[in-house]
Picture 1 (cartoon, rainbow, N blue to C red):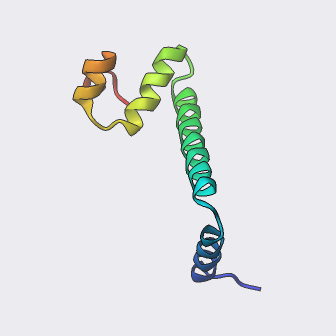
Picture 2 (picture 1 turned 90 degrees about the vertical axis):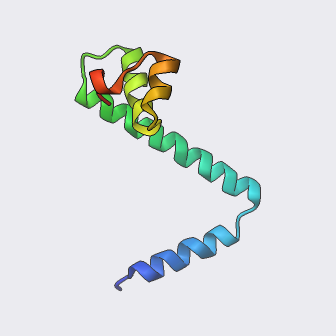
Picture 3 (picture 1 turned 60 degrees about the vertical axis):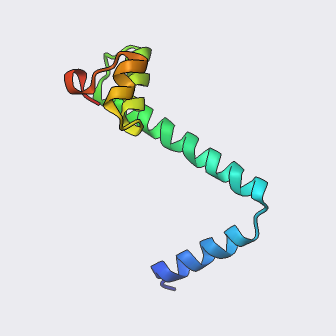
Length: 83
């Protein structure tokens, strides 16, 4: 049996319609946590010698796309140190 993209999308939408607002929020929070964890793991692979603070700042710089905010709030200059 071949499942096409349209069928997958239909199933996802059907499932979403059956969720309560609280369940939808919980899924969104879990997805955000998954993405942050994946970014952290990618940074650790790319920069194996980075300490925990550097890992957190590099991961944050990948989703906070405002270099001025990163530099002002955390002292992390993406132009100098990268993402």
